[in-house]
Image (cartoon, rainbow, N blue to C red; front, side, top):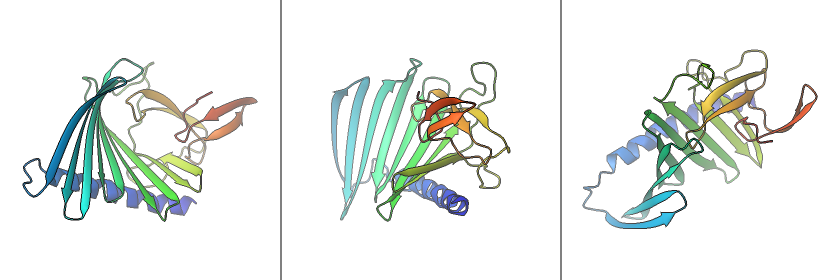
Length: 206
């Protein structure tokens, strides 16, 4: 599984780069495309959706403005093309930008890669914030995830259990629990005699 995770980390990185380039090249001035716009009220903000169709392919883009649990303004732009989804999230005025790419392979494997740029550098008590890419692979309902060491492409491992402050998909700073091998704790775990439940990114949910 470790070898598979390493390989998919590289693949996901390439997909994120190429996917960003695809949407950067789709300028609003593309006269070959038909565009439709609508605005509607959503919980916590306004959504604007643009659908662009060229030939037999269809690209969609939607922007949502809302807020996170810290009361910061969160602007999300969601794109879809060729079965790959990408979200760019800007949080408040601190310059935090999250880029998240999702794609599915063979109908059973879902790969999510999120990167963080900008934003505050320290957590609630002065801790360093981990801005390494977050990779989560879900196959047949089982998820494995990690912080990817940008230098080696391997899971960021310290040889012991550790926690890292990092941004979630809504721009909230949350604590991620990581095991000695560098993988997120997921599901129900008993740690030091205490039962804890984690989501797919190692964040404590109860």
